Length: 264
Image (cartoon, rainbow, N blue to C red; front, side, top):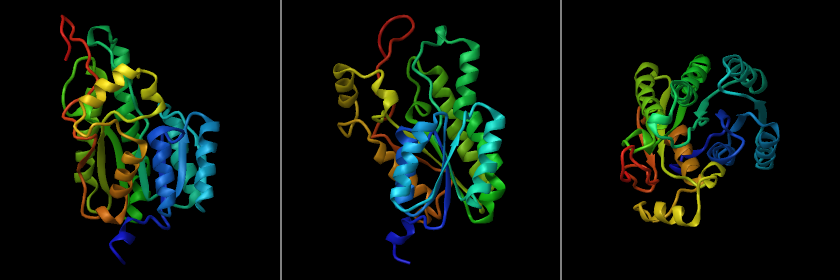
C-alpha cells in the first residue's frame, strides 16, 4: 500500500450527523471521493437527498436518515438503520451542534443545558450506540469541536463550555476505547457555511479575516480534509488528539462585548 493509499476509505461505512449542509455535507462528499459509503443524518430530507445525489455520482452508496439528534429514540434508530442498510459502521462523525454567541447573563439555564446536550450529549450517545460496530473493524470517531472550546471569549459561555467538554470527552473516549477504536476531534475556526452567513456582513467578515493569522475564513473543504485524515488509515497511530483546522486562531475571531463594557 502506498502512502497515498492510506488516505482511502474503500469498503468503509461512515455515519455523519448534520450532513445536510456545511461541514457535514462536505465531509460526506470527501469520504465518498475517498471510497466510503455514507449514512447521512440531519433533520431535513431534501437537504439529505441533495448530498446523497452527489455521493452516488461519485459511485458510492448513500443512505438518508432524517434524524433529530436531540431525540434519543431517533439516534437509536439512526444506528440501527445504518447497520441494517449498510451492514456495518466503521466511522462516526459527530458534526451536529452549535449555539449562537449570547451574553451569559441573558442565557437561561435551559438554554445552557440544551447547548450542552446538542454539542456533547448527542456525540456521547451516538458514539456509544455505535461502539460495538466500530470495534469490529478498527473504527474511528471524529468529533467536530471548536476553537471556542479552547480559549475563553465573551458571549461564548454556553457554546464554548460545551465544545470544551466535547474536546475532553474525545480524550476520555480515546483512552477507554483504544486500541480498537480511535477517537479524535477537530477544533474548527470560523468556517464559511450557511450558519455563519447569517451573522456575516462585509465589515464583520473583514474583521474576522484580519484576526485570522492565515488571512481568510475557513472553507468547508478545509475541515472535510482534516476529517478524512483522522478517519483514514493515514492516522492509524493517532487517537485522543484535537486537530486544529482554524487558520492559526488562538481564540474566536468574532469580537463580542463584555458584560460591563469593552470588547473581548
